[in-house]
Image (cartoon, rainbow, N blue to C red; front, side, top):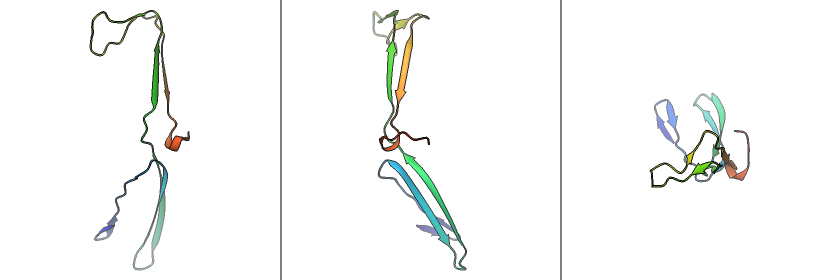
Amino acid sequence: MDIQGDSAFLGYHFSQECNHTIELYAEDCLGNSNYTSMKFHVDEKAPDINKTVGEPKMLPSVYEEGVDYWVTCETPIIINASDLGCCGVLENV
């Protein structure tokens, strides 16, 4: 902890993902005190994204950067994303 005048600073780095709670208690020399807690959700895994491009579609005849398919306005494109959340447990954050 770094104490500078009337303020104290504490840096912390989470070494594991999951749910963490930090509890802080401070007391001055006259016995006045205060308490607080903070909950953090550390999630280092990216969501899975799957895409399905229906018909009609056509692959480009020559490579064009950033173009996977040529489609029409009627081509269905379905995108699904899923994420197991912190520690593999779905939870409202």
